[in-house]
Image 1 (cartoon, rainbow, N blue to C red):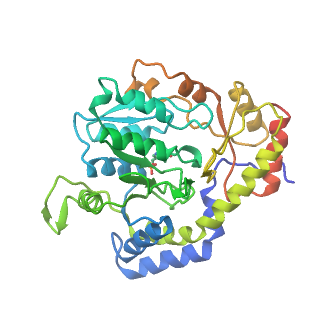
Image 2: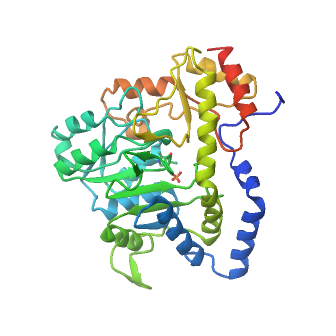
Image 3: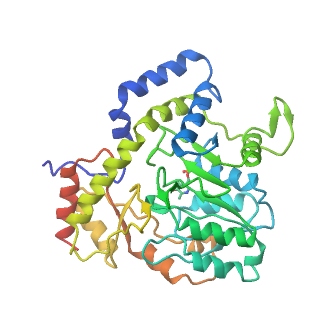
Length: 369
Ligand SMILES: *Cc1c(COP(=O)(O)O)cnc(C)c1O
């Protein structure tokens, strides 16, 4: 055991090195091809990712935030609409809602999973602001999918669209179906630290609806169906060939890496029993892809600082709920959300860690908690 080695919360360089020869070859192939944007690598990745998910189609875009924004526009959300989501998410989720001219309505979370609470959604939709909701964005946070059967049923009853934020849930299953195949549309990020990460920015929109996929395809490139003729007000959110080629290599390893993350998570769960921390739950009928291994303690800041002294870098996703951030401030109280933001700590978990690394984190954590 080398105690001097720093243990990072995520390690994109390790994921590159694990597939170095394949990725290097893919990069050389693209460089030699002469096509660098929206070419055969992008088309192949779109097909392969849809097949992996069991989805009917995908449209790649420049990043995960764009994917949410374009997905919202593709289902008809626009200026003056309201979009229901949670406040314990990354700013990107809400930035995308605001970017289409809509207003976020924050819904409370379940205390155990820290995911959108379906009863709270139903309640929010019956308020005056809730009656203007056009779409709901459930966030499958940390790698655990939301209660999609309940959320989809509520959305159908209210006639609103479901736009899944799948940036942290590449491969999460709930009630036998992949996250990203429940809603009208789903948005994925392939930011380098995600379970499926590029070596730069990348994102994708997934849908079973032909009209939504077609809208997304137009919106990502100036509203073009045919070159130089804009049918709608689109934008530029294209994916480049290098990232697509890299993602094809990484996709081939995703199932195995998710399984390996699961083994490391089991090790944490066993090793941290009785350590005085609230451990993550896997709700019945769901599989966790362990994008983050999140423990909870009121002494979060102290534990984080003490781990850091031993070279163990833990993350906080996310310290400030969106409704308390200057740009998005809303005068409302969400006690479960606010408590989660005060207590959560992500212990290092990624495919570049060894079981011995995890044991070192367990020992250090047990010594303090
Ligand atoms: C990473 C992330 C995003 C944004 O993705 P980018 O590719 O960074 O734009 C959106 N939502 C969640 C939950 C994320 O974790």
